Structure formats: structure tokens, C-alpha cells
Length: 413
Image (cartoon, rainbow, N blue to C red; front, side):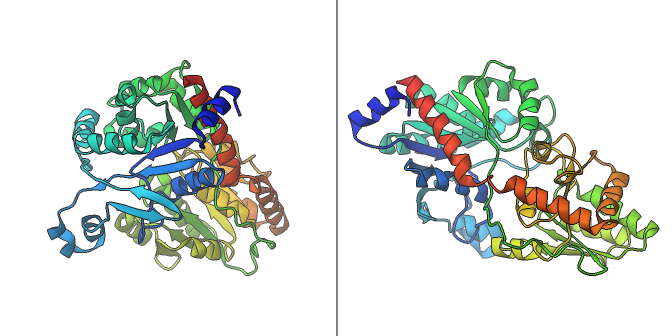
């Protein structure tokens, strides 16, 4: 630990205090929402960092709880709760979603609804540092309050520019993003391709660090039984949206079915607004009997389905890293990802996984064929992938993050 920080903490007789500010945090009954944020911050807590979570939730009047689903969940959401050993303050907030692209309008509405609540909680908790996500919303608010709160700010980025292009429109967010990030004390990226993509927006002056994501590292003693029968069992995991590459994957499998007689089954884990669109694509490509939409399942079920699959394929783009790739690799599955995206930090093509070009349906078909034409080669790639990710735990991630936090605090004292 930095000597200056050690003196600072000894004078106060306590550990480092970090306030996490993000809308992306799970709650009881919605364990998948922001689960990776919880995993990282819980590991940080296990290292002795005192954590306070402030996670605003969307304001929905209680009268709308009769509509059920998310309306009921948000309308009845508690203001304070405990999740996995962490205390969470969850004030209501307002943020505009959907067709409105103006980032300033979205932010002003969000800021007006939650600013004073964040200030009050900071004054009660007295953090040494604020850790936050999303430089256009959560991180932007923290940076605007930096002088008033008098604490350093670290922003972690889990997305790619593609995400913000879709959210705000290309050209509408870049200057805001750059200004916010250049006013924070450090930004953490989760892969080198992601860092390079954002450097084109933020420049090279801001302090940054690449810390690879971890995952719930449940390494199995035995690898999945790859290609134990004649039907190729494919699997992918991710929110049902275009940037995950589902239209490309379904088209590739439609072409596969047309030109290749090898039978297959694809299981898609996840849900989203585009589900109906992709179900219609299955009809168009004659895949209704070959594709199963499993929806959202528990983490235990994810691993159960992975261990009964042959190949993990997710040709996503605009992907900062992709934790589902790591989970699949930990099960010994050969993985097919997209070249140039975050996962290319992990995968060496045809060594511990396969990489295809963005939007390349023929490349996807060739990658699948490369694996099924030599089962022993596929198993070897799966074993190498499993070995690659064995140390990508959330604890190892948190150890690196804790060093950055301590150095950041020490520099401000």
C-alpha cells in the first residue's frame, strides 16, 4: 500500500471507504441485472474495502403495480435493502429511455431527480472515493459534483462506442463523454480493444488502466462432453439485441441448414425487446425446429446448459469483453467470437477459440465446420480455452482494482 495512504488510514483507524454509484445493480427478484457489477464490488468488499452502494431505480407510481412485471417491481422497490452482504440505498430517479436521443436532456432529468439524494448519502458515508459507471449519466453526475463532494472519481466502462451510438446517435455524445472522462481521476477499461476504441474519443491525456473482467469462476473437473452424438448442440448467451449478432448467426444457420446436412440445435439464453423479431427470422430461415429461446435462467442453469453443449457461438460486435465467453470457456467449450472485439484479448484464433469477422455468415459456418470435422481438435481448443480463463476470477480483478483505488486516494491526500 502507498505509504501516504497507509498514514492516512492509520490516522483515521479504518479501511478504505468506496461508494459505488450505478443504476446497474441487482436486487432481490432480479439477480441478473448488473450481476457482474455486484460480483466485482463484492470481491472488493471481501478484500477489506468498506462499500456503500447507491443504486437509483426508475420511479414508477404505485398505482401502476397492477400492470405486473417491471412496473410492479419498480413501483414496490424498497429504498434500502441488503443484497449478498452489501447494504444498498436505492432512491427513485427519472431517466428518459426510448426514442429520445438528446444526452443533455436525458441527463438533466436524471440529475434533477437524484442529485440531492446522492449528496446526502455521501455526507453520511464519507467515502474516500466514488466508483461509478456510464460517463454519460451516472459518471457525469459524479464528476459534476466532484468539487462539492471533494473525493476522487474512478469510472469503469463496460460498453463500447457502439452502445452509445445506438443510445444517443453518432456524434451526439462524444464531446460530453470526453469532457466527463477527462475530469475524472481515472477510467478503467475491461479490454485493450475497448480501450483503443475509446481513446479515439477521449484522447491520450486521461489516466486509464485495463483490468480484464472476471467471471463466476466455476471451473469443472470434467469438460463438457463435446459432440457426443450426431446433433451439434450450439449455445449462445446474451441480451436479445442486434449488436449481439443474432441476425447474423440465424442467417448463417439458415444457410448451414440449406447447404449442410449435419443436424444442429441452437439454444439462446437471454431475453430482450427483439425476441419476436428473431423468432420471425427463425420462421424465415426455416429454423423453428432447430432454435430454442430459453429466456432468462438462473446462473446455475446457465452452467448446466453449457456443460451439455458442444460449441458456444456469439458473433457480437460492440462488445467490451463478454463474460459469457469466459463462462463457456471455463466449461471446456470451444468458443466462436468476433475478431477485433474485446474477446480478441483472450482468444487466439484456432488456438484456444475461433474468431470470425463482423457480419461474416460464411465465416461462422466455416468456424463451426472446422470444429465438427475434427472432434479431437475441438476438444483440444476447448481445453486450451479452459486453461486460459482459469485465473480470470473476480477476486484477481478486485486485487488489481484495489491497487488503483488506493493509488488514486493517495494522490489526492
